[in-house]
Length: 502
Ligand SMILES: Cc1cc2nc3c(=O)[nH]c(=O)nc-3n(C[C@H](O)[C@H](O)[C@H](O)COP(=O)(O)OP(=O)(O)OC[C@H]3O[C@@H](n4cnc5c(N)ncnc54)[C@H](O)[C@@H]3O)c2cc1C
Image (cartoon, rainbow, N blue to C red; front, top):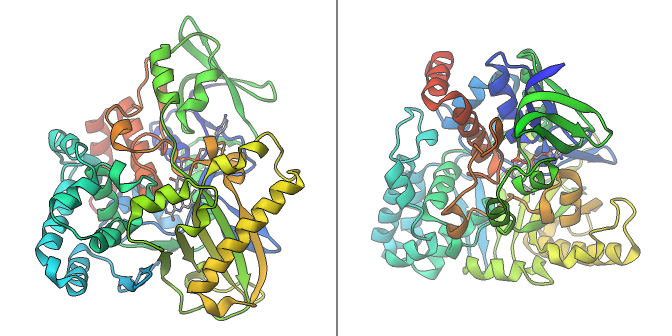
């Protein structure tokens, strides 16, 4: 059997690309090294409790918002039960001397900020206008497919930190506006204004959970792939990409199986592909440049079941010990990063309690892979005692921090599990357990990784290219497939099928 396209990796990027290409009547096969689909978006079960790894909420799923357009085209919108967050209070930011309950909609936010920082009203209006304006430049983020490439590029020439300083924002206001930089994992002084603006627009569009979480999304994507004639094989780690005279012949998996194909879309971190070729394909200047790119930070995850009623905790909470977000990233790179930042969500408050009437809490704090390198060659499930001791110490730290912002759960935790950067690396193969792949920083985005490569028929997609996150990765798949099919062709097809009804 010869495939038109083999997609390496079944994360969101791989699955979206596989559906787009199978909708073109191409014979498509997805190969995934893990035993289930979804990459970072999968969930795991312990003691009957289901916890999410990389899915907590998605922006842009409100009526008429851009992700609905793409998901409708992918055929998954009707397969999902969407559970919107409360638009009047979707997130809370907690700083040492202030708590802010955030509400959806940039105009609503503008009013909230003006009420909170009245002397900075002009700065706030200037900022919100700029954020709205920048979105208009990005073709893939606008349902009318209009944009302005020159202005888009210009928005990458200044960091969000420098921009906010230039309009006179105070340290406190900056802290509030930059709090969500954890969604793309880049310190504000390194983040292009354009990247920040895209995330900020998305974040305040709307927030939506999905009944069944990441698994429900993955199942819907796989179902749609199969409905369009595509296939997916699990426990198939691709180890070689075979070419003859620089023409793609196929791929080989760890168990020695060869799959013949004409084209390949590689959806994991691009650096993982460089050692897979049997011929010299890329110049060393290209592979060295990309291999030297910095990855985003990793994280420490804490997953708990508690015997206390948290049904009012429908909003996500972000805790910061400091308004200086750049300093928090520096702290995250230290050897005890868990004192830096904490995000928690209570999915059961939105989706319903567990069978034994417990609430679940999922937390994320930034963590530094370097603290774990000495155990990087040890195997998942068989790591040594000193690793477990270290992990337990961090677990206690995070738990302690969680108690300080959610005291009602103290002595009520009935189950607890944790993940480290090594866990991330094991399950997703993301180098250094990086949360969002290659860092979308000013210096690295000057020459970003392109979907199309020098090897005819070999493409990249996924979070390391353009934007991470559910919106970013979905859109990146459309960008990759536009490179193959033509942008006008794909947009016309989307318009014809979706008919503006999303
Ligand atoms: C803790 C955490 C919380 C997050 N929360 C949110 C959130 O609430 N909302 C949001 O929008 N985003 C969130 N994100 C981000 C989002 O999950 C990711 O941006 C997105 O899932 C990345 O998708 P991807 O396809 O690019 O990569 P991945 O999910 O990493 O997929 C890559 C796939 O390739 C496979 N693979 C790698 N190498 C091979 C090989 N050789 N052969 C076969 N298969 C291979 C991997 O197993 C994996 O399945 C979160 C991320 C993390 C880590």
